[in-house]
Amino acid sequence: MNQNNKFKHQLSKDLGAIAGLLFEIGSNRLVIEENAVRVLQEENEKRKKAKLKRNKEVTKDAMEEHAHTEMQYYLAKLGQALGYKVWIARNDHKRVWNDEKLGEYSLKSLKLHNLPENVFDTVSLIDVLWLDQENNIISGFEVEKSTSIYSGILRLNDLSLSIPHNCQFYLVAPNKREKEMKAQLLRPSFRTLDSLAISYILFEDLRNDCDAMCKFGNDFSVLTKICKVV
Image 1 (cartoon, rainbow, N blue to C red):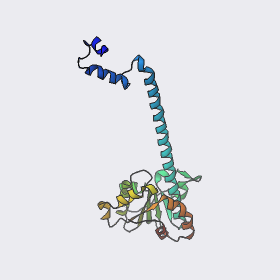
Image 2: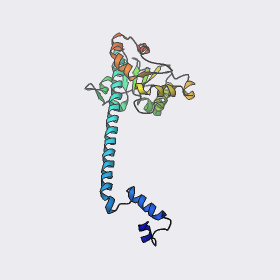
Image 3: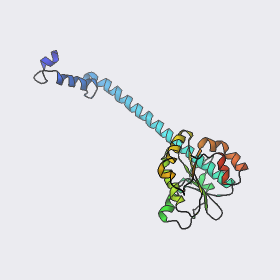
């Protein structure tokens, strides 16, 4: 009150101006000598928190990429054990798991007949494909770690509409995304697609059962042991 009376020619009689001024100072939006040290401390804390958050994000991204590569590795290993040719998404050939490049399990080039160029470009980015000896696609797999499950389904749908025969498609995702996968596959726009048969496989099941399927499986039907249908 004393300060308001002292400077009332610069402030307002109803205390509105001085109240706003005190708020600006108290919230550190206005820096003066009395709060300068506190402002510096708060700014340092903000920087520390931002750096910690960024480090966590980088670590999370690295772990997700690690898991994505791991699943591609298991699918490639299983496909070869079952006697199929394997294609790994063209931009993933240099990824490494167990000191092995994924490209070592993959065809060097993908040869599919009668596909429009734009469709071929999309198909070549599908995470894993299994092909028979005549280069007919038997199965397609999209590994969804944190990316959109919807976009993965669309890529598989593009493929299903572009090949003359039916084949089985799979979404492969972390256990924590199972509900999301079910919800996406139950969308009316996908339920009405007769050409698109999609099951899903959980990371944990593929990780735990890959070696057994490699040893005892004869063809793609071995996946019925671990895949789930909505």
